[in-house]
Image 1 (tube, rainbow, N blue to C red):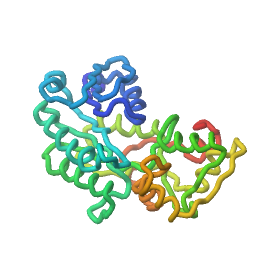
Image 2: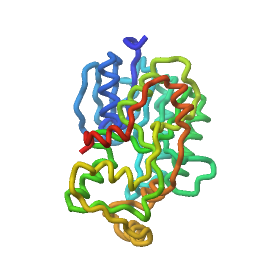
Image 3: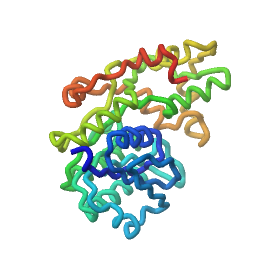
Length: 289
């Protein structure tokens, strides 16, 4: 079944996409990968670079595709790229692309903490995107990921950048928890969703087996180097996020980080049937540095 599967990956140049595409390529899954930016091509892969995702150009190339994976999204707004445009309107475009290309299934990465009770702009845009997919009559699996970690993930790059300055800043107390999941586990879980018919019309938290406070995560991450770790007043950091577009954290970055969201790991484990990586062991090994 795997050899005859064809998968479309939207947002192919990002961290998750790069690792996922490599995993799928190694399993001999045929890929059609699309991005606004240039990217390295793997075996079994057709590469499409497009600035505006023009349907007349793309649709003829998607013939006989089985699944579309939408990995496009932003976690920080700008004047040019806001949540409604990227997270919501683009999802509408992707759903239309699936229907016109006769792709029956969509896999979408939302966010841990997203719900109908969301009051934060990022979460609201993701929830509305989820609802569009659910109402589309397509088959779907929606993942709500915590921090996805691995070489060059967003959080790792942020911490390494601070290390180069000689100090890592922790917003507030750092006692809020995160539930990271390793990119290899993410890739394996998505592979299973693609290749196993039983995964239909599901919303799953995409989380690791261990919760860890952010301050302990930072300590473990940097344990092999001599680096100053400083707690910064939340009011100070939020003010910086609001007034400086180049700040270390965006407002919603902070909302997500200190939200202390917990995911249903047991449900994910029972459905995925994979052996999860230990984030604590990964941090202890220093392999992310």
